[in-house]
Image 1 (cartoon, rainbow, N blue to C red):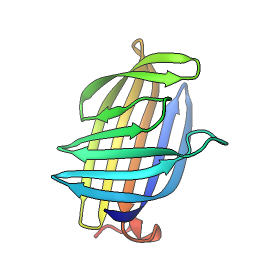
Image 2: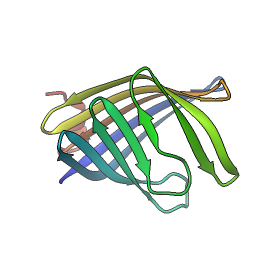
Image 3: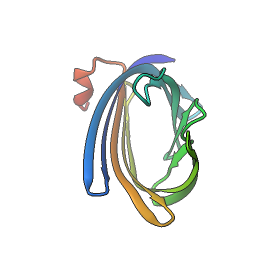
Image 4: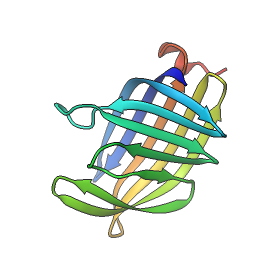
Length: 147
């Protein structure tokens, strides 16, 4: 297991509005049997404790698991739909996730994941998401330099 800095940039468009977030985490990278795991803690809501999160990349499929009762596990595979049961304090919502693109760049020191997906509920588009995740064993500033 290697300590890494994880930089995640997310652009979300929904109902005509757009938002952009950039977050830096410190976590761990583990490479096991052709599988890469990024483990870190993230704050999902202000004032709440951090939630352990595991992103697993294997065979051009990315999964995200948050160790919480809220939300739901997500699976991203290019040109594939996934049915989600998303847990909220108000109850469980059924959603569909469609992965438009999942591009991965790997080196011994850096993992870069470019992800584009859409969330739907009952056939209605809820949000359009572009996410870039860069994890490296180097300082956050040098995460921007491709080898």
